[in-house]
Image (cartoon, rainbow, N blue to C red; front, side, top):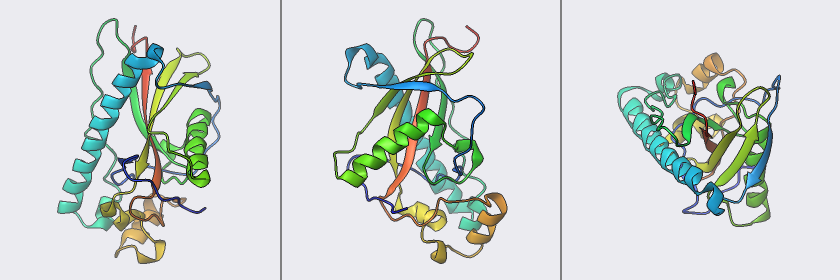
Length: 214
């Protein structure tokens, strides 16, 4: 699949997203609808989602720089997981962040495979890129999962920073040991052959009106 180039100023930097893998079937897929991000009814959710996306993006880039400064790219393959990011604490009476994850149409690790709602968001951005349309800076969904409280999802597109090409660049040009470790840790890996600034996928913030345990 051709990797579309991103218009400048639209995407948040992806960091080295090493936890992306092929789409898997789910036992129970969510139902969902896209909402207008500018609707005042979703303003509080949007603000919270944007703030957490910004924070997660900063943590990702810091983690990438720190890990690559002390490890070879081959060793870094298994170490970058947004592990240093902590969810903001819930505030009584306010929407609460329940998860932050990344996903893509070309994934590396099973942990980040998209469900049906994620896939719809990914395909929406893909169509905009392929059709030459303005790229959505933000997507908002209301999602219902069987047997679970409804949740909001706030998505932002991710771009590929140049430093991430050591693990996500041209498959034939990966550094010493990188290709071998990718085969070991992620045998079904598809997250290669990216170029600087190309679209990588989405970062997603899940938000609930009912924090866990409430």
